[in-house]
Image (cartoon, rainbow, N blue to C red; front, side):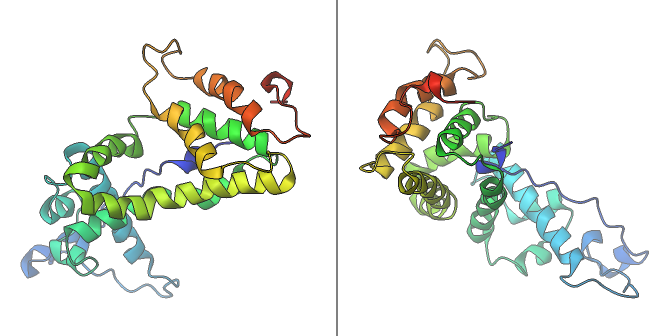
Amino acid sequence: MTVSAIAQVSPTPDPQVPARPDAAADGQHPADQPEAAPACRRPGRPRERRVDRAIIAATLEIFADEGYHALSMESVAARAGVGKATIYRRWPGKKELVIDALATLNDDLLAARQQLPERTVDRIRAILRHLATRDTDSLAGRILPRMVVYSVSQPDLYAEYYHRVITPRRQWLHGILREGVRRGELRPDLDVEVAALAIVGPTMLPTRGLGTDSQGRDLADRVFAVLWPGLAGPDTPAQADRVSE
């Protein structure tokens, strides 16, 4: 079981679409050329989806590497292998493009719901382990520190990021905790908001110098051992070492 989809997705653009022989002559960028019409095109305009994915992937990479101010429609077009006109047909400006790109970091939440274990105790342990061992070099890992800074320097951008990226994650975790309460696996008077903060907060802090291993592998189990007695319902074992893996 994996829960890496909780925090990140790393879209990869499709290979460059070859240009028509006359592409240079009509002044269009190679990736903007229309494809030769197939005998039977599948529904959903697959070429449009490929172009969209390439633009989103390029936006996230530039944003993660260079930040919001360095990102431009020109740089995204060059990285994605499309013309600026292709981007402007989809997004009116840079901010809208960046917000939509950031929102795709949650694309795997649905898959994560389907992959989680059945019992609430195992779900919480799995989430803690994912958070504690997350890849800081991933797109989401590189973007998060920038968003912390932008919460002060770019409050409008951060507000959109919080609404489109953070809020769905919070609602998802709150739903897991409330379901645990309904099942009787978590205490009936559980403060869901505080419990969610207690789960996420310790694993978001740097582990260097805190006595944990360099990859945070033991941090999740240690946090779980502290938290679980305060989360467990009256008929659920309160000792972490009595909970099956």
